[in-house]
Length: 215
Ligand code: SAH
Image 1 (spheres, rainbow, N blue to C red):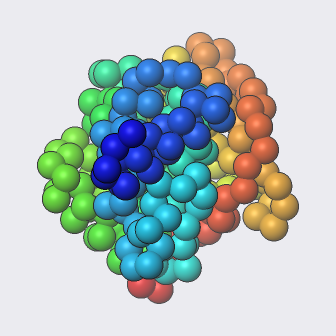
Image 2: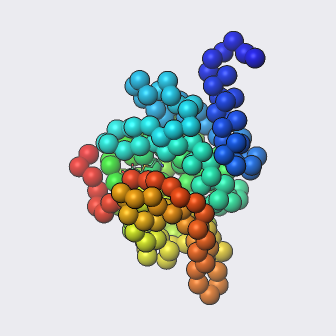
Image 3: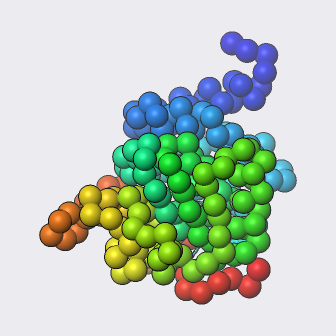
């Protein structure tokens, strides 16, 4: 036991991830290193180590840690990978990805969220991750192709531009389905001759919307 209540809560946090089926040691280590408390503000900060989604600015949410871990695990990241995330939100998921890959680009339709996330990356000394304000459903053609793509907002179908920007041999994880229902988390693998689709589990995400937000 420890006298530090934060350390105690962090231990419970990692235990919760393991009990949800997160077995990849690299993912667990990355999530131990990236402090979720740095990505949640106001009075929600006291719940930073609970396995629950929390509200952030612009009416959006920071995902549930076990969902972040499961999606990261499903990506099977390799140290040399170039990764694209759609839906920066708080920047937490992108920060976790940055510990496990060479370079991360993350796109957010709310400028305010993208700017706040970029500040957090800089404050934490995470130099291989960049947040940009953009409509992520178009991807980031300038930096394509990507070894891995992670979409953290629900699309009706995997967006065509993102499929096109996935390298052969690459993996994309994307929640698919209507925003007001339970969605399916899909793993898309690009082979020499096309795409394979595997259904992983049910999830619930905010919708992938077109265009930039008001703020
Ligand atoms: N990954 C985030 C949580 C994602 S919440 C985290 O770790 O905190 C989903 C985010 O997707 C929201 O911030 C929402 O504004 C953003 N979003 C929705 N549609 C988008 C689009 N077309 N392009 C970029 N971001 C989008």
